Image 1 (cartoon, helix red, strand yellow):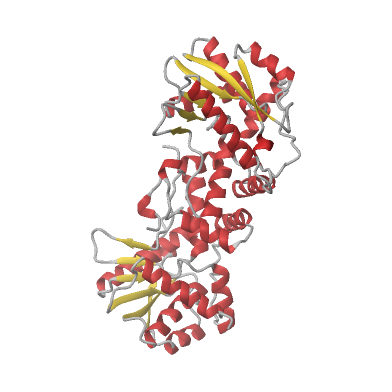
Image 2 (image 1 turned 30 degrees about the horizontal axis):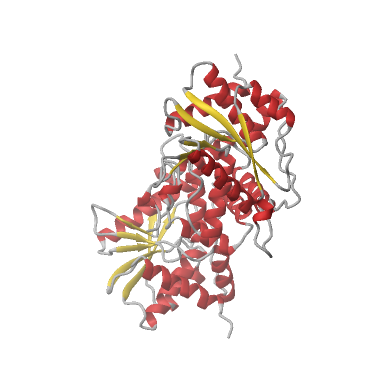
Length: 240
Length: 240
């Protein structure tokens, strides 16, 4: 029997949840629901696991609606979340309105604002985990931006624990490649949108994405090994 | 005043020698003299430092001549070594003759054989450091071969100390880019050869070289930051 794309993605989510102990029994998990394909695929996978009794957690989606791209989460996708049994909360944040005079909007700043609101809401409402839809390619892109731009070996980790707060940020899609997410979203007919705000400055991330593709020749094995190598740092064979 | 390529390379060698404490005062250093541009540029730089009283070391070159490419170190390059005041020893090793029946010759095996002979000679003759001509691009290529091929974060380090023997392998060109070595070798009219043996199987290394160029866009800053990032491993922002 051929393994479906759904089974492949689900297997990788199971592996990530186990490897990094992402979700504790009975935990209240807040899902960052951007309106994009990544968080939609993640939300659906977690919801189906819960429905099948393979995940003991309370799942709630939070969509941070901004003032310049208010339709980011479509009505059809809202209906999907309802189908999956995930209550969706929407809060309005004037991301653009928060910009200091003279400052230009950019993706990094916008996502930081949304992240802050997710965490604020989670803490106020008693959630102990915030699930974000970042995937393997996101982790590799951040890795190389940090290595080549800052001279630092670091990336977004699968789990971030805060010292001061009883809260973790978790990334259940950490081992899933973007192409797998795209394939699954298409096969499900998920009507997820990509951000189409007028401030699009994804050029740097797009460029680094192309470069990672060139480095790996698009090979899944090479990408997985790159990520895996971050767990096998052989300090004896690195410059001190 | 513009900095010449010679000054740039020399500055990077000084920095590497200092950063990793590569050569101890009065130390006997055996230089691996392959006949190529890398070891020639390294030998010349160390010899000039010594002549100017900026390096306290005894320098001897060792050329491992093999049975299938006996002219790898040209007569003209031998004359250069003599000019620099570096005695050259040549020993013959039947690399091809050592191959077990049915095994194919390859660059990795050949270089391992030569390395072994260098170390054997160094120990027998009382040298405490063996200097190899590997440069920054070599280190990055090995890094990505190890990351993508083995899932391990490691590369050739600037200094390798052996636990059992009073011997270190050092790489004084560790911070120098290959393009700088090529430029310097050309400006000096160094008649170094590249290996032209009939077994050329550099295809994998050549492919990885192209891929590192694609990743970095050929940017020196990006390459230097990649190497530097290996010295700044932020474990908190890596998958555990």
